[in-house]
Image 1 (tube, protein in one colour):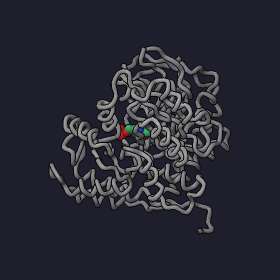
Image 2 (spheres, helix red, strand yellow; image 1 turned 90 degrees about the vertical axis):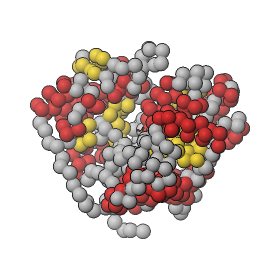
Image 3 (cartoon, helix red, strand yellow; image 1 turned 60 degrees about the horizontal axis):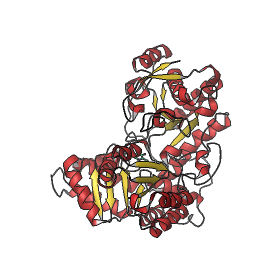
Length: 458
Ligand SMILES: *Cc1c(COP(=O)(O)O)cnc(C)c1O
């Protein structure tokens, strides 16, 4: 191996876009205009945009070149066959159904298998997954291991599912009411934490015992595979592709957002082995997305994803990716800022409930912290807490399990000096945390309120 400790970005910059500088005074006015909701901001009023890693990464030279090969034939485009081969190289599911993004795959799947009385377990449902399950009248249940709910605790696989709780749920609710068991890799809403192969095998065993299908929410499969490579016994000498194939072989299907580990700006898929289910899903696809050989995508998008899937399993890329996230988390920890430990794959999660312990959860400490980071430094993060998860289907409001602010790192987009600036701003705000005040919601929609709600300071 290499004797040098510095992990060099595994790319050179080929094309650049300007950063947008502004003053605290300007941002104060813009924040007011946006109803204190960072989703309502114009992106050119943000300096460092860590709202999401979804579709916001830089594409490679080879992806842009692949886009030129895009064939826009309505049916049977060569771009579709390249996409299909790239997906099945990693996940050899029988049926691959392209969609315009991950939530479209979820919408199609749950509208076929969900419905009132049904229960869908997951380690932790992502917000769109939960919303799509609940929209059908089904119940979304989170079964992450207890360690996964303790932000400060170090554990190599905090995304693991509690298999004892899974079996209890199956016995309590009846296997016939559980159309599928989901596992999200990595566990986005639980801190971007990975799931081990051993845990996936244990979940598979429970599914086999009760004859239930297991699906992956595979958005960050490559990052999860890298964590397995680094942390799970006996995996160090295996290739990332082999680990990914092992993960896929344990499942009966998957949903995927290609805006994450597809390394593309748009796209997704739904895949499965069940022929009858695939027929129903394809019918729904034609109704809502498009013909089965393009789904909601242009041929050029299919090309960008096919090339992205080849790049994302490169160990040099994954080593840099995971290390650059850990760099931010380690620096913040060293400065005394409470963050979810260990660092997730795609994001660092600030523990706003702990940092702003003077603000009760129903006054949204995560929102207060996220807006303060924007105001002081032009940095846009995302509340993942009571704003996102507090409103219950029956209309009541309860505190979420954690109140976090997610700083998601777009792929191959920001350099180390951008991240050093983030460290400086977050540390400055954290040192003055006691001056921050809680917030109230002035206006909210019936579902997924975090995207459009308007807030006022208390
Ligand atoms: C992003 C994401 C989704 C939804 O994908 P979109 O492409 O945003 O619709 C689903 N699950 C997880 C874990 C995600 O991170």
